[in-house]
Length: 120
Image 1 (cartoon, rainbow, N blue to C red):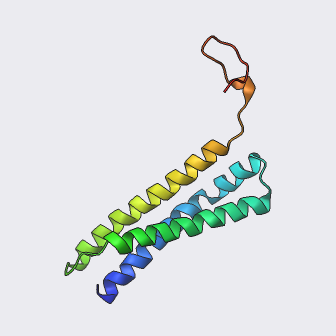
Image 2 (cartoon, one colour; image 1 turned 60 degrees about the vertical axis):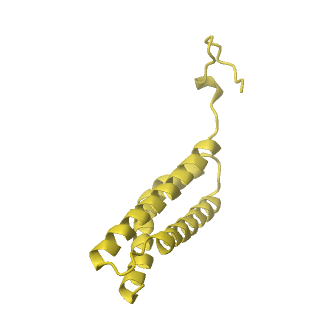
C-alpha cells in the first residue's frame, strides 16, 4: 500500500461519514429530543454514532479497499465503494435504532379487527 492509497483509505471514508452525519445532525437531535432524551443525551448519542460510523467505515476500507499494485483511479473507486457501503450500514443501523426507540402511540395503532387497543 502506497502512502497515497493509504491516505485515500483513511480520508475518503472519514469525509464521507462526517458529511452524511453533519447533514443528519439537526434532524437526529430533534427526533431524540422528541423521544424524551435530554439535549445532552442526544448530543452524546449522536457523537457516539459518529465515532462508531467513522471507525466502521475506515476499518472496512482498510481491510478491503486497497488494490495491490493498482492505479490511483482503481484504488479510489474501490475506496469509494467500501466507504459508501460503510456509510450505508452505519446510517441504516442508526435509523433502525431510532425506529425501535420511538414511542408507540396507542391511538394511532389498530389491530386487524379495527380495535384501537394497545396490544403487542
